[in-house]
Length: 304
Image 1: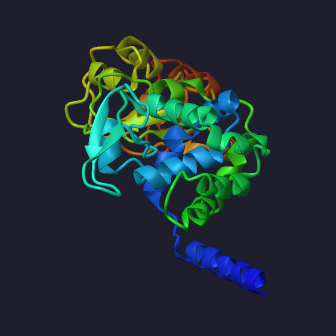
Image 2: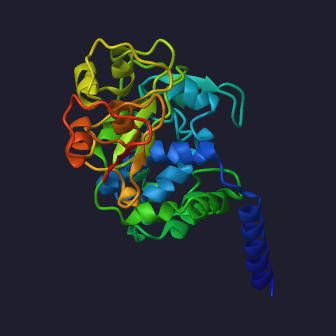
């Protein structure tokens, strides 16, 4: 009877936690930024990407915690048996010692090694990669966190954001992993949010941005950035304009197959190409136009 009561209590607690949890745009932005890094760690160490992301979200407050901003520590790992950089933070006691890292990549890598090399977590690696519930409860039982609701919180995050879909991944986007390795950037710098569109990544330029300043942040040559965006490397950037981080596609997204673009006042062939994430040359070619053609308001252009 007692076991049955405990099981019912755990179920009610789990439902209650999930009911309280709401979708959060900051959490989603964190997932978009680090999912490929979590997948790459999974393929090396066999730790479910869903667990890594959920722990990162929970321990770092989606990258906004003081510990993460000061020391790039995404997983709340303390200084035990650590000879690297450190930072101090109030936790169970005042000013406890925590590991500090140069970037998110180092934090994710150390988290994987921490779990893989500690004997107390050894039994977790016999679980299937898709058994995120087993991993969540196992981490709590093995002493990763003192919060009695730790496992249910991880499971709630995984299920709300459907992180378990990444546990079946067999590849990852190398660019997003490399971006996590960018050195010499203070965690306090307000980095540009990275967005995904038409199989590409982009950010919106801010006041004072140049290809060189963006290059330092994202770790891509400013000459390449200019080339990807079909611009001169010394061009001035207008706040709000789209800057792509990879070579653009030849066609727009599939949803525009039967939806031509109607030219509006102030638009140019270039601004339209940027809007849809396609190459300017491809836009001319699709519409059988020469580069010296001047578009007019009301013209219809194929974008796919």
